[in-house]
Image (cartoon, rainbow, N blue to C red; front, side):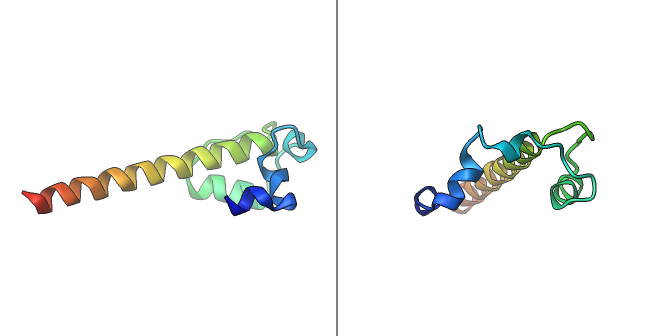
Length: 78
Protein backbone atom coordinates (compact mmCIF):
# COMPACT_ATOMS: atom_id res chain seq x y z
CA UNK A 1 0.00 0.00 0.00
CA UNK A 2 1.51 3.34 -1.06
CA UNK A 3 0.19 5.18 1.96
CA UNK A 4 2.23 3.00 4.31
CA UNK A 5 5.42 3.74 2.35
CA UNK A 6 5.05 7.49 2.88
CA UNK A 7 6.81 8.47 6.17
CA UNK A 8 4.45 11.40 6.79
CA UNK A 9 1.44 9.08 6.43
CA UNK A 10 2.80 6.69 9.04
CA UNK A 11 2.05 9.31 11.67
CA UNK A 12 -1.63 8.89 10.88
CA UNK A 13 -1.45 5.14 11.35
CA UNK A 14 0.74 5.00 14.48
CA UNK A 15 -1.46 4.77 17.59
CA UNK A 16 1.43 6.04 19.74
CA UNK A 17 1.80 9.38 17.95
CA UNK A 18 1.53 12.38 20.30
CA UNK A 19 -1.19 14.10 18.24
CA UNK A 20 -3.57 11.23 19.06
CA UNK A 21 -3.44 12.16 22.77
CA UNK A 22 -4.35 15.83 22.21
CA UNK A 23 -7.84 16.97 23.12
CA UNK A 24 -10.20 17.45 20.21
CA UNK A 25 -10.72 21.04 19.02
CA UNK A 26 -14.47 21.80 19.32
CA UNK A 27 -14.11 24.20 16.37
CA UNK A 28 -11.84 21.96 14.31
CA UNK A 29 -12.37 19.91 11.19
CA UNK A 30 -12.62 16.63 13.06
CA UNK A 31 -15.65 17.89 14.95
CA UNK A 32 -17.17 19.13 11.71
CA UNK A 33 -16.76 15.65 10.25
CA UNK A 34 -18.11 13.98 13.39
CA UNK A 35 -21.17 16.22 13.21
CA UNK A 36 -21.55 15.59 9.46
CA UNK A 37 -21.69 11.85 10.10
CA UNK A 38 -23.85 12.29 13.23
CA UNK A 39 -21.17 10.66 15.38
CA UNK A 40 -21.44 11.50 19.07
CA UNK A 41 -18.43 13.22 20.61
CA UNK A 42 -17.45 14.91 23.85
CA UNK A 43 -15.09 17.78 24.58
CA UNK A 44 -12.78 15.49 26.56
CA UNK A 45 -12.37 13.17 23.55
CA UNK A 46 -8.88 12.95 22.05
CA UNK A 47 -8.02 13.49 18.41
CA UNK A 48 -7.05 9.82 18.21
CA UNK A 49 -10.45 8.70 19.48
CA UNK A 50 -12.18 11.01 17.02
CA UNK A 51 -10.05 9.70 14.19
CA UNK A 52 -10.86 6.11 15.13
CA UNK A 53 -14.60 6.82 15.27
CA UNK A 54 -14.51 8.54 11.87
CA UNK A 55 -12.55 5.62 10.38
CA UNK A 56 -14.98 3.08 11.84
CA UNK A 57 -17.94 5.00 10.46
CA UNK A 58 -16.40 5.21 6.99
CA UNK A 59 -15.67 1.46 7.03
CA UNK A 60 -19.28 0.78 8.02
CA UNK A 61 -20.52 2.96 5.15
CA UNK A 62 -18.27 1.06 2.74
CA UNK A 63 -19.43 -2.31 4.12
CA UNK A 64 -23.08 -1.34 3.63
CA UNK A 65 -22.37 -0.06 0.13
CA UNK A 66 -20.72 -3.34 -0.88
CA UNK A 67 -23.59 -5.35 0.60
CA UNK A 68 -26.11 -3.23 -1.30
CA UNK A 69 -24.15 -3.67 -4.55
CA UNK A 70 -24.01 -7.43 -3.99
CA UNK A 71 -27.78 -7.56 -3.48
CA UNK A 72 -28.26 -5.58 -6.70
CA UNK A 73 -26.03 -8.02 -8.61
CA UNK A 74 -28.07 -10.93 -7.23
CA UNK A 75 -31.31 -9.29 -8.41
CA UNK A 76 -29.88 -8.94 -11.91
CA UNK A 77 -28.96 -12.65 -12.00
CA UNK A 78 -32.49 -13.73 -11.10
